[in-house]
Length: 95
Image 1 (cartoon, one colour):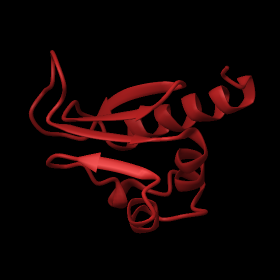
Image 2 (image 1 turned 30 degrees about the vertical axis):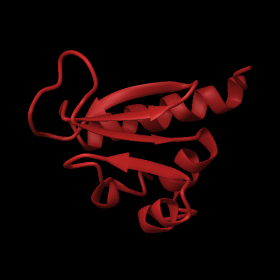
Image 3 (image 1 turned 180 degrees about the vertical axis):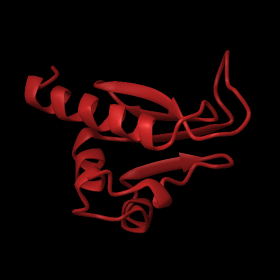
């Protein structure tokens, strides 16, 4: 079940990320709360995108506010990132 407070935070930070990194080449997934496409590059329209980033809501919120950094999340396995451009280092923290 989705927590309404977590949903609100995830949506807010996904919106900020989409504004900070406009584009359609990377899909960022925060199941079950939401997903966006961002970062300039080849446009993704159908099927699985070339670059996918997935993490849980707790990790995403921590990245957004600067509690952890990208390298920490990837090294401890809380961030799964694959494909070209699947690195949000230059866009984080969001605040």
